[in-house]
Image (cartoon, rainbow over all chains, first blue to last red; front, side, top):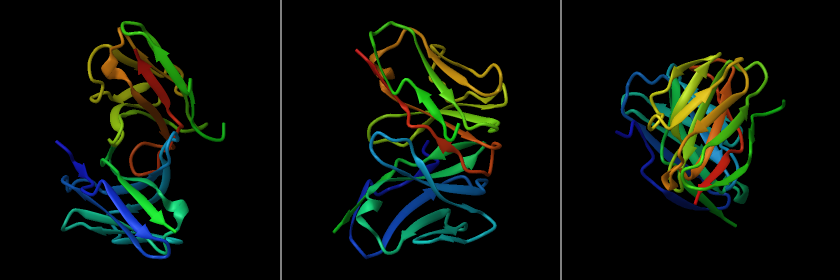
Length: 109
Length: 114
């Protein structure tokens, strides 16, 4: 049973535009969420987090939005850069981290 | 150390052999996690430690898999009688405390069972 889902396996965006990566979860008890970025042959790198007491958290070009009633979060990257091309994972904290399947972002110059 | 370190970075072993994968967490981090990742999938939880004890080992697929953290820092994941289906990247992460804090990952060990 997949508790955290990223339904888009891939996303292609033009440089300078906004990238929006989506994530859905099923367990309303989750109260902390993280986004990770992964390049090939490297471990995931922490990007940004959000607590369920907030609905938005911003760090430079990266903003995460949380909609608790919809059990949905999204990561916005503005403006997108070619170096952002990577696989992005969302994760929910339930003791351990529970990951989605990932979305591969490709930013075209 | 500065980050989470995993050794070896690559391991090729024959079916049926025993392997050990090592993880050195960030100094002072009490929580340590093991995951494995297959191509095109997200990291799959195996086990996590709080200090020396396994707080949750519900992700270990069967009794061929075992992990220890005897002194609350370095951890070893042990796989007996390896099978070709065990081939994956094994990831280790650590966090200051378990729960609502960021976990930092090592670069992973790519295990190939031939």
